Structure formats: structure tokens, C-alpha cells
View 1 (cartoon, rainbow, N blue to C red):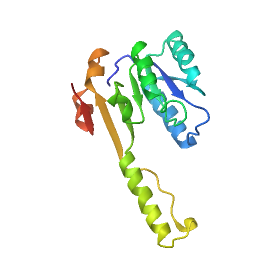
View 2 (cartoon, helix red, strand yellow):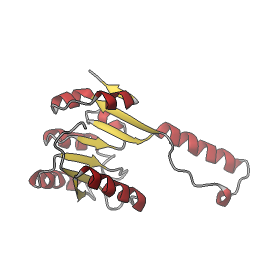
View 3 (spheres, one colour):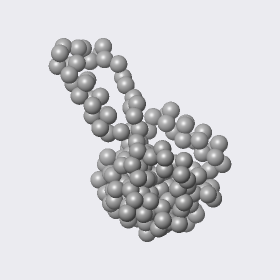
Length: 172
């Protein structure tokens, strides 16, 4: 485990972005198995970011999970990473752009593969397939990116087994 004494994790997300119930159930189940308490923190606008982080610090969150949000969090991703850095929270994000600008790590669907799947759908539609006949597909390829510079700044040791699984390691 990258963060040894992890017991309380903030889950930062926008309630306007619907998370599939199956995903939330898996998150809650995983937290229970690990003995981690989740604290759901909502941001609806960029102005909610500072108070959200202040609240997590007040409640002693010792880690952070940043959910996907194309309306607030991803638009202002550099500010999110700056706030995470300011409050010295180890954080995991769903999108690889976060560790590229200083976030600790990301794990999420591979966007290149999602675009490839989308192009396949467009191709079938243009060739005359009916939309109702096309199956719903979920992502099948996921990507793990780890920023070792950030890990060192947080005084974390990333286990070699996790580094070996990473698709990309940012090492200064």
C-alpha cells in the first residue's frame, strides 16, 4: 500500500455527474474491506474547491480520490492539483492529466482506447447499422500513471509491485 496509515479518504466529486450505482457500490465495498472510511465531498462550482479542501483537512482526511467531472474538476485540474499539494494529501485521480501536472497517481479508462471504440461505433453507424442494434460497451483497457516526484515530496514509498503494474511512471 502506498499510504500505510490510510484510514479516512475524501471522495471529491460533482453531484451533477452521475456515477453508476455499480461503481459506488464497488467503492464502498473496497473501502470496507480495507477498513477505510469514505467522506464524500461535493463541488458544484469552482468556488466550492477551497471550502471542500478546508473541510477535508478539518475532518482529518489522509487521502483523496478525485472522481471524473468534466464540468468543474477537469476544467480546473491544475488548481485541484495545487490544492492537493498545498494540503499535502496523497490523491488518486481517474485521468492521466493530473499526475502529468504534479498529482500523485491516476487510474482510469484509457482514453485512446475509448476513442478507438467510439470510432468503431461511428464506422458501423455510417455503414448503416441501427443504433438500437449496437451493444453498449464498457471500457476494457485501463491505465495506471504514477508520479514519483510527488511520491517523494509526500515521503511515500511506492511498492515495487505497484510500479511494475504502472503503464507510465513519471520519474524526474
